[in-house]
Length: 121
Image (cartoon, rainbow, N blue to C red; front, side, top):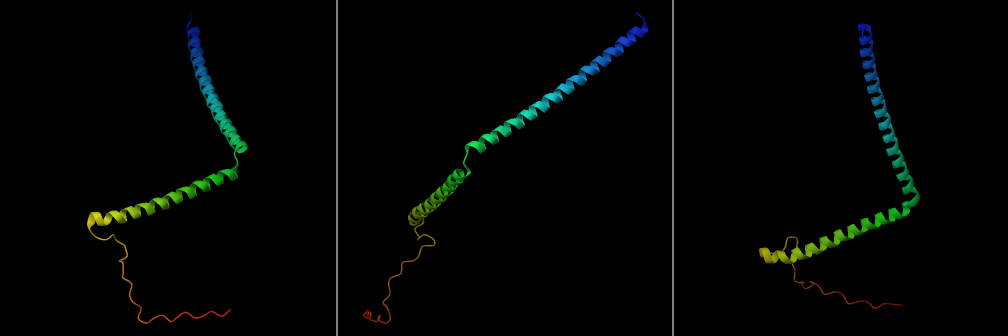
């Protein structure tokens, strides 16, 4: 073989390898593009399904119902825990619970109340 043929062969192999690399990169880019487009299509189909099968008014009613239920349960649990702690506090500490009103004995009124008036019809 002559030198020119060997050089031409080597350079053609380099170009062929370079071309193969470029084709692989291009195929990888195409594959990524197809994957992105398929994901976008799947998202669009999911949104279309949601729009076609769901009633926004019914979802809002359910959401409001859950909000009310959690509020009622929160209030009920707070009241129950306060009552339980009010009963346990004197047992644990020997003192009246904080914030409890002292029971005051009813005082005698200073002046007697005036008698009720007769109603005129």
